[in-house]
Length: 380
Ligand SMILES: *Cc1c(COP(=O)(O)O)cnc(C)c1O
Image (cartoon, rainbow, N blue to C red):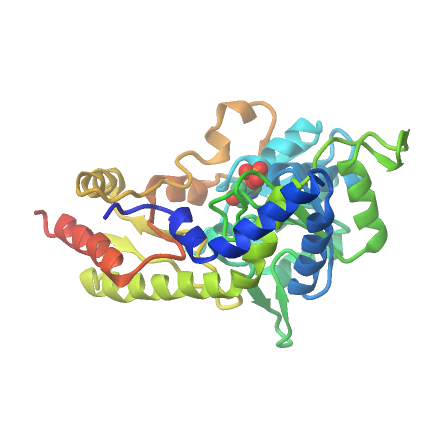
């Protein structure tokens, strides 16, 4: 049995009939572009998220770009992003001639905090992009308060946390991606809600902003061949929407399966290393459920690469998300600004190791991973 980081085939086989029927229906209708499955998906996802407008697009990176375009930011405007994340958010900021301002992250949850963001605000700051990294929400209430106090837009990068829920101090809960002005997500196959190719979406509660974003995603036209703003060509493929319609009803069960697998890792790994001498298991936020897009250890004292290599030797894949913080990426030299020293982002990049995590994990597979970690620790 091959151990995989993600088991898309195993997941597909359990819902094969639904997926195949959905794809076949698109082919039968030949409505390949903006077919009925796309509208159906937008509506179903909007209600799953607790009532929000959904604008579909071609991928998660486009979603972030369209969000920034819709807010009408101007060259020189600063947008705050975490230094420890996937490149997309900072990339689209720079692509639009805006200035990415990198801030440090909380070394335990890997997420940005209001405290990190606060220090980076200048008169040029216009927006913040909190990224809900690895499957749990940033602590949004203080971030939203800060944004409100300074008149800043909040764009949530929810590519890794769809289905997670944040609890406010008054006890009410909201799904990630629906708390800021705009939420963005990706349906890349390995994401928690993934299609069988590329896909993305934007969420927002403001109907006119949603309409503007949908216009931007469609060449800036409301009416065919009448272009009122500069837009782009960014569509969710109808076949991909059909796959997503088949998968969305299972999303909560998928999150539960990931949480169960994470619970199993937590329990076994903590008993292997009770003093946390070798690694720490993922920290859980007090304010958010965790949907474990990744199960990420922090490995101590320069042992991360050796552990990765040891696991590989035992046939166990593991991944480093992300090996370089943004401040060390060549592309951003001279383009991005750093707020402070970004030491935690660096430390995370040097110590993280993500173990196999997916909806089809069994305790049998996990036991193999765990016993390899155990052997590494005991030096065998
Ligand atoms: C995957 C991902 C994206 C980009 O999504 P694509 O669909 O690959 O463009 C953006 N941000 C984060 C945090 C991601 O994990």
